[in-house]
Length: 294
Length: 343
Image (tube, rainbow over all chains, first blue to last red; front, side, top):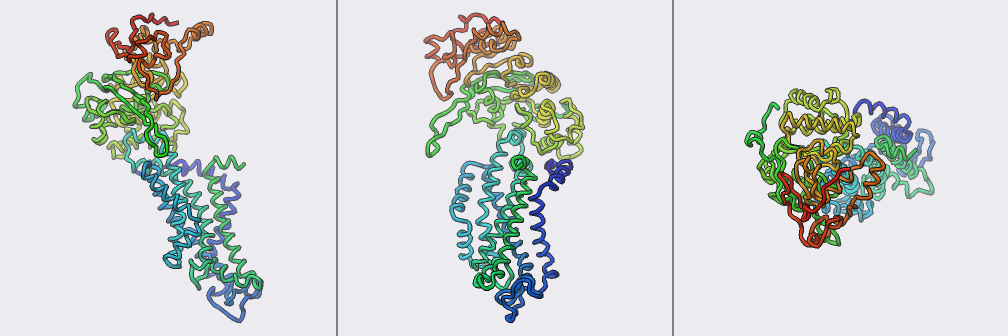
């Protein structure tokens, strides 16, 4: 059945012209470089980190950056900041990407159903989204984390719950527009089933916006996850995590500012990377925004 | 055609392909805080006509006259009153609930061939999909039939690999027709199928449709506002105005001897390729006013624009009456109205 779903976007002609567009797409390239640097350090953490990230040496607490053997210095327990940063990349990527994927799936399905079915189903789902939107994201995530107890799992659940409405709204909007397209009505006249119409005629239109907003949301999730960890509701010590490193350095901000500043910069680095990547993908997939940008 | 579908086998020759009896389509107007129904638009208000097997009936009228809504109602796409539509003797309600029978009987071709094809589907895939849904699961059989259908609408097989963007309007409309034919329908509702095409292509598509009709004994309901097109393709003509029938009859009878003042005004609105004559004509033309459709006034719907309207027209709605064989008109004063002189 899949031969019906061949999309021109994946066709060779468009792909080649896309390759040409990638070369001139600066935000995509920079985003790609930033994100892949973090991805590589996460993958190769065991090989490239100079020290054990959890080995505490109280004798060398608060070593400043550029000390011998400790390029980025040590923290309040005498652990190597660089090693913790490299290992923290794993958690940072995990808690940014996994919640995005899960909430994209759930939000996407909800949005697809709401947009396609319409009437009271749409009203019901949208009012639920409105309620979720009424809370500030971080506050809601805080509440959920606090309610089910801190930890990696509860943090992911909290982030998924907070971000579902964002994806749901976007996907619903796309579906609402496509549903009124004449070719969807033509499919109905030809007697195609709802499943077929949704899968082969509506879903392909959702892929591009899902990819774009998924990437942008991943960037926002980096910050959200770090905030939760900073407040002690996310990753628990001693697992190296950027938000928690930030929290640990908070008390020594005057005496040893690098302990908090360095993980903070890492968070910004990754968040900016994902945002640029998302912008770049949008320029690539949506010719209209490309025109307006230039 | 090689295959006879089950519905085809049951019915006899020259049956009524489409039978419309007192069709009403109402759209609620909602408003206020609770989206209550505050008013009703009667887009189609008591329309009756027949389309015989193998016949083309032209449905004409101005924008907003309800002609498209009527066409859609025939395939269950507009909210029609139950029991008002029968296709080959079977009611729409029964057809809707029995599998693909409705699609097998009637197909719709849309006005805009640019929007009615999925831009992400290659032409071949779009036609194969229709074949697949309607029971042709074998891939090579589907491929062969798809090529055959393209050939029937005058397209070369190479076009199967192309996407709609790479096709001209005329080619796209041919593809849309081929896709509808894939279902092997017996009735085709052609909703302004040539309006979006330029004149030279219009002729090609109309000839193609007429050839297909002859070869496959198809019944056409040809919805259009273009009177010259109607005259060219239709056996009979139905004139609609504000959701009601005004006149109905054999094409030549209606064109040469129109009885209803509205048909007069429609025919005189056809431009003449002579600026002097055209200016003369415009002076005599009736200005048809556009009025709120929700307004339920009594009497004839055309009274506001009719030069012959009198007190009777304001009170009593005229019924369809036979003026000559196969020619019916809904006007109180059709006998008094001077003959139409075509300029």
